[in-house]
Length: 407
Image 1 (cartoon, helix red, strand yellow):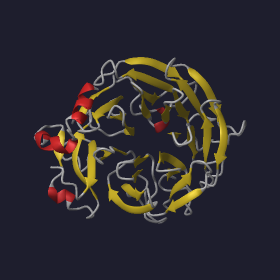
Image 2 (cartoon, rainbow, N blue to C red; image 1 turned 135 degrees about the vertical axis):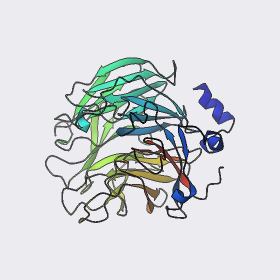
Image 3 (tube, one colour; image 1 turned 180 degrees about the vertical axis):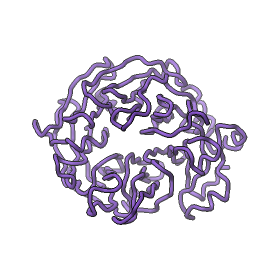
């Protein structure tokens, strides 16, 4: 992590080192004729980098969540293709290394695959795995190949999935959405022991989250609580919710309902009291009422602030405080109910006005996204093949506004 801090102090960013990297096999500068295919003005791909642990013989084809940690300036990408969490310098975009390849990898379905969600908690890297396992790695020991220091069994039968970190209480909340009944586990970052398990079976103030499971986990610093997105309540595919968990008591404090015709997935804490909720009913959607939709809600009251209809089909969504933009990993976006296939895009939304700006074409299964608030670069994992990757067999695509003059 010293190299990351040093890069920040020297003002070194991905864009300033790009010319030096342009001849290396792990870096690809997107040519002008490819960038010209994108809407102007708007967000365009500038370059891409290789994912550690992948190669022409073992291309980057399967992945889950990507995260950016402001304190360490590290990006972490759950790479099922390499059975590891890949680690990147978030300022330069340069691959740093990866965890040991101890994860389940690509299973026959998502619920028996890993790694899944990941988060940096202090100097630790946490990631979900199958079967029902949370793996913890020590970044302080070696950020390029952090040793595994704990394997925590959350007690389910399928994968441990999404997660987020509460630094005030020293807790990581982890979802087991594929196990019936679905549940969330609170784990101490100090003792690496389970503190509480909250089962979403309709009792004790919860809703029945089966069979839709749990969409995502978000620690909301604005209210000091965990938010849990619930794609569907019981067998009602058109009814969804967000649960609020008090980390101190380990109980569900309230349920925000009316997240309807959505199948709530990823969440991102925006400015003020706002939270963006991605909707991913899959493709094809359960029925014609599931037209593209993205919600913004108030995190204190649950009131719906906006319904954005120009983009949907999201898994991961992200808020960049550097330019006040939301970004969506919309792999299941479709233009109308009669569409025969999804059109994956990177959705761009103005977080101040909650107005849609544009949809940027990405590629098959492009469902993850993060952004660096210092450079305003946007990072999108792209499976092989993709024109943004060029000769790299699957890559981390790096996007920016087309008026950027960084090189």
